Length: 436
Image 1 (cartoon, rainbow, N blue to C red):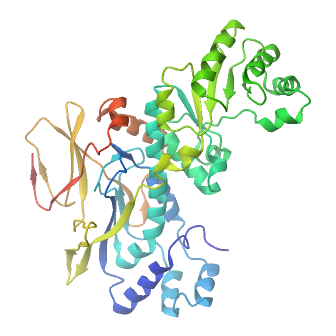
Image 2 (image 1 turned 135 degrees about the vertical axis):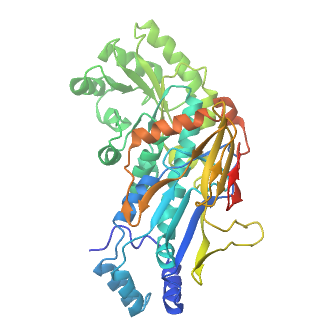
């Protein structure tokens, strides 16, 4: 049977592995890091996928079927296949946890392992962090725009089936209340929500008949989809069928602002004053923010969320920053135009003053910090895997709390949504002692 994760990689990773095994550098100790150079016009980014990476690497082995495929297609030599047959990640990973904020050049993940191990894992690590973080960042901005109103992730049918589960997890960490995806509910204990679609209404001889069928199985603690035909008539029919204690109606078409105001007025006139209004339909943070004064109680978010709301990837890159040579760990860095980076392993810290973030910096993991100010320093990277052993639990409630606490360090919701440039930029101090 093929492995779950080992071939989620680019062919050139194994081409480089073959060269490294041939030249003798495969076993040298190396440090790789993941960071991004920008935020695509946003004030901050949100990390998601860190704890999921731990689970993926725990299952990262090459099966006999994988090895047969690589050998029969002349992708790997016999020596490389022998190496892969015994592969188990034995290194360490330190990373920003799920829910933490990041900025340009934040070293969001540091991998310490042999050069060969670092090569093999590049694609999988970037794949998870780039997608999950893009979704979490979009979700966080939607939560800010919603101003306390509920948000349900409903994007499963707009993306790949595995990506849908990852998107539900990322959006929950960023503050969404629920997901429509049952696999996400099962795997990650995320609350699930869902009501009815247009098909069940169209299949009945009338809207009233469909509502009666729904009431028979769900009672009045449910949400009626009222816009299959005429929205206002649908509301009247729903209240006549379920009664004024109907929990909610959902509107999936029309102008959400105008329609929700008319719906609220009609519901109140029918004594359904506690019936909530949920709207859906390709909403992003800008659309949600524009509805701040509309009588809307919650939003169902699909397409714009699972595609990153215009920014489908976090833009993270994975770079070798140090390699063992002659018994010493030597910093290395790319110097290409517009793609420069800082060599050397890094540990990151965020400085806060009066509970507001004012700086983010990184320095050598062995450096010491002597602080003489009243500012508080928070180390951002947590151990995820240490010498091949997973040391982090995927506690989604913990990550949700961390995200909210980190956001409070940045400022008001309006400022975070309107600011087009990063509020901070992580700068590298280098090795040695930091005195602050």
